[in-house]
Image (cartoon, rainbow over all chains, first blue to last red; front, side, top):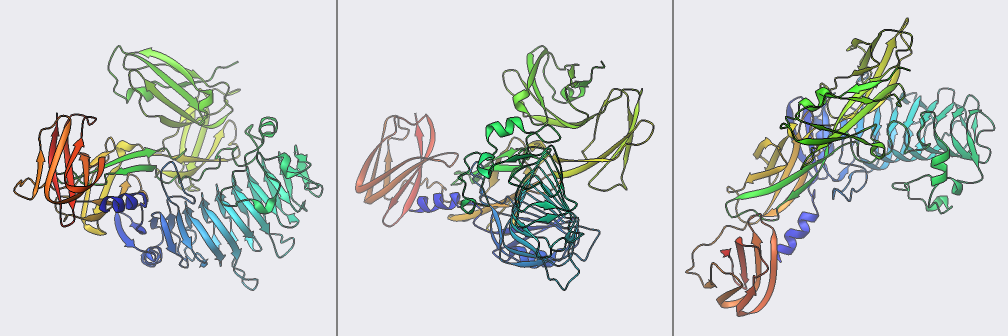
Length: 324
Length: 293
């Protein structure tokens, strides 16, 4: 029985939520479901908080720090469970020009932005991110999302947002035609809940409501009348979404927003290229979509279930290139 | 038409290869392994050139590994290809991560120059680059990932959430032996992270520290013969419930259930060596060292 328990616990690796707070050369460790909250409370501008696998309670994020997890989805090859921050929270940045950088985390709640300057989100899954309130002028400027998936992006007061190789399942603005709500998308898939103004799209796949006003599209794919109300160059229009993606079952509501691969059909990938000659969509361009964190080589670790008789514990570490 | 080449001489020098062995270098650009090519050479170095005329101007990654009887890991470097048509040399300047207060300058005459990223931490970065013919071109930005080699990393391990037990050392080839003699027998956790230019996410594992061998044969267990070749016999005054055999790496190699005071175990299939035999009765558990001939 002891062996069985040990075996089960080994496979349930990272059962302890751990947060490392790095302040220069000094590292402090926090444990448990509130580890992130406690590390955040102790953090200063520019510090790095690194979270293990596991589910952490959310805390309001009002500091310009770097926040890192092990990944936003399970990594079967590395036997690595994701880092999850559970629950709703607010975020702001009172330390600009220092910026908030977040990588490798699944946010399962609602992130309410009450003023952020140039935050960067890398390889995160975000359930919902929205502007704090209509009465507040504090929005989000110059945000950059790279290799992220966002279920709900409510961009009412988000100025100059950039998506690179991202998936945005529902992009909507409650305030139509906000002149400063500019969005640039590169090699992404985005679904516009309603007509979108001031959208610049490159090498991307766009669905939903049309693009209007100052919007422009280069080397993009869509279906229906997406590009009829905007400037468009070298774009391609299909009859339906099913004609674009491989194994797509045609039911938008059945998609799994966290993991839907969104692989182009072979003929589409071969025939329609972006401005840089790579395929259109999330797997083309300079930074093809991936869920593995980039900040540090991720690694596969094997730990002996038992110590050796002379009191040694064997550990084997294999470092995986962050590009893969 | 001008031919653009990438000189790889310096890339190979650092590997410290022995002389006169025939080796193959497989290389590719921009992560596109499907378009990889090979060069074969002898000796420690290859003072060679690689045609990059098919690559468009801009930032590229160059990946390669070497094989003789074994293979090296994959190495990578970042370089920039610029056209020099109409100019004998070009000035360039670049900076990372929007930090134009730390701008780097240089000039290039053959269309290729390497960019030093050693000062950056691992992870995703931006590079902003402009070149000057008569005037500086518009700045272009690129994303890239800085990675770190295993040999540059140190491990930090500690037990049972107690950082006072921390053990550190070089990761080296990836095989680490932690000293657990100060821990009591039973279940423990080991937490760890790697530290290079930055730190990795912590991981925690559970292990069992109960393999201290009871060499006292005066107990109620008798294990014979020892050394053994084919079969092992175990006798006890109590009913033996379970027998587990571990190798010296702590890996379980055999498990048997039992319901009597005596059991015989076939060990014919085990490679020769030293093993640990853990025996469990209703009232105690003991571990004995076994030598398999």
